[in-house]
Image (cartoon, helix red, strand yellow):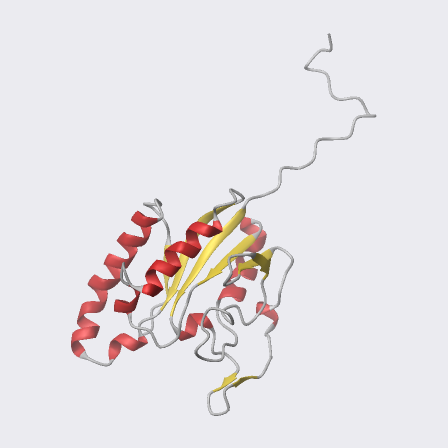
Length: 194
């Protein structure tokens, strides 16, 4: 019987490294998250310019509209926010900024431009689609949801009533997402414009 405390012989290859799980981030909100950078609003075309911090990387994936993992590249939301032309958004720059610290990054694009927070309430199409996509992202057991990046609110500034209701609506959204994904401490990163 071989002593279990002896190192493996030089002829035995070392065990393969354990692959890192995908660190999954949900991208949600409205047009700024969906990506309007470089889009000429008068001609409805994206200029195709991708800044250095938004370049693709082999360790960054995205969940397509048909729920398949693929290499991530700008525009991330091209098959999600289909009512308008998408360009550069914050998803790729975020991923490139964190990938060396957290390992492989996987993005779940869900943002749709021109939407109000009430359209992201539980029971509404946008909310239910976001939750469905988030659950699909972990169905293979090869990743874990690390956070939700939220960039939305401009559509809720047109009336005083909508602006005053925003905080409660946002708190309700956070509560519901954490509950529906069974992630009670899911970090929510919210962009705040002042």
